[in-house]
Length: 289
Ligand SMILES: [Zn+2]
Image (cartoon, rainbow, N blue to C red; front, side):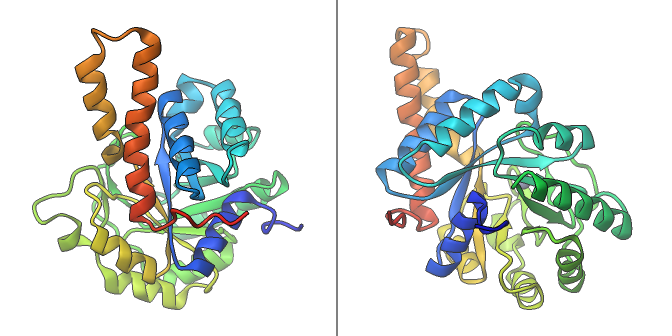
């Protein structure tokens, strides 16, 4: 099968487009979350994605990425491994030598032509490795665990420029900035800040096969996710809200349980949060062998 149809992220998001659902991309930091995400997806027969930050490249190294890829790719359901918010060229170089299915290139800081040339060059190099590229357009503000804080003025994705950008770079997935922020929202939350009209316009002008990726889903609002799915969102990033049960379990049990029991319980606790994420995006039960 030719590229990018042979790429796992591409296949998962294409199936989601055909079925009009989305998949969560779970931000994982360790094996508890990795195993919890995989077990949740297997139990609900749900295709999904697991993602790490460049932090993992540095803190845990390539061995962890290879382990994560092996675990994802041997699951009973399709699970792609993705690198979220790759900002540094050196990290991109490292990532292209690792078994990622897709990489988010976060180059929203440079001027348009430089940005397009840069992303296009990464798309070309990644294609040679069988890896697809998610591109950020505009700037999704705020910070989250594993990412440096961003202190820029809010910059929304311009729909016309988005269409030009995606065509000229050849990037496969688009993460627009439409009032979404990383981390907690100010008063009013996503309901107040998400610009659905902007998303609709982006979808209208961009090549129709481009799936949209939603960042900044804390808190996650079912009603908004459903609207986003109808507007073409196929990958929903999830981070902080996934760890609520996990952190609570560890806080309550870390001093009393033996390490084996503590690990098993922690995986179960993460799995509970992940299962909610799979149901919210409606990908549960969607994997057909
Ligand atoms: Zn993000």
